[in-house]
Length: 85
Image (tube, rainbow, N blue to C red; front, side, top):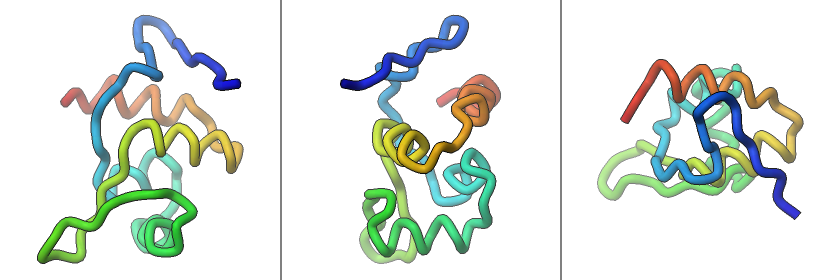
């Protein structure tokens, strides 16, 4: 069963946005190269932008990845607060 995450006024389950590789790396506190490897080998599901080498991953997939690997959700909370769509 999915844990519902709510911090302050942010409802993490209802966010509908995609993150670039650099943002994913910042949130997960790893290098962009490490995050790209995670995307390429399927540890985090993402899509590659046609005609480029850039990747994107959906918010819900990022939440799944963070839960699976025990990454702190407060990094995501801070990112969402400081980087509105």
